[in-house]
Image (cartoon, rainbow, N blue to C red; front, side):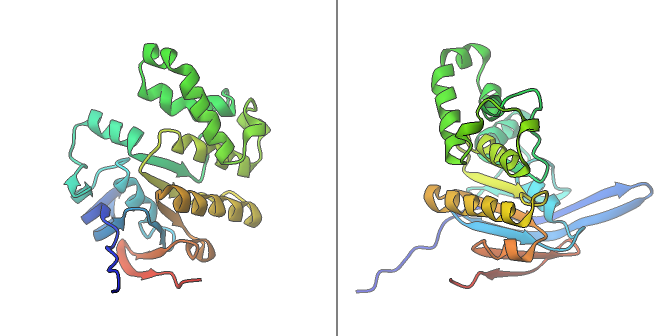
Length: 244
């Protein structure tokens, strides 16, 4: 008897999203009626030309910005209209973020940078009580991305690839359900970029981490399981990557 496989549940949804920005006297329609469902545990890439709305869509999905029209839904429940404090908590606990520019704090070591989301999550007293446990957790994440030998180094002592790995460790230390990566290889050479994508693929496979990645690089996009192409603020097509 053939076993019927249940498709992965829809974890995150964009529903009829519109977003317009004003540049001087002009209004620029960045997104126009975008609908997108993201499956739990998938690795999805968003690709398109500069100005197509890729980063805007990612920022809306991660509650870094709000749509003018439409909704963001997590597990079927609308989240973009929630109080600011609740959205802050979702960004700290549900979403992890990786950007083209690493946004590491220059005065902090790798370990301290990776710990920073946990410092934000807990009160000073609670962090102090749990500091050994949390430091161990951060060191484990740093080891996972291959930076154990850089614990006490500051960002200016790291290569571009090492800084991005530190940024990925920082984004994952809070154990997010969804990782949003905006041009994570954009500042890296080809070989270093391949290493970062291999790391993301491994995290997706081993942790069943949902990953949405914006990229302008067709070859990088092809490493994801599903590819969404944006054009002029609308989804032009969605396709599954060919197996193998």
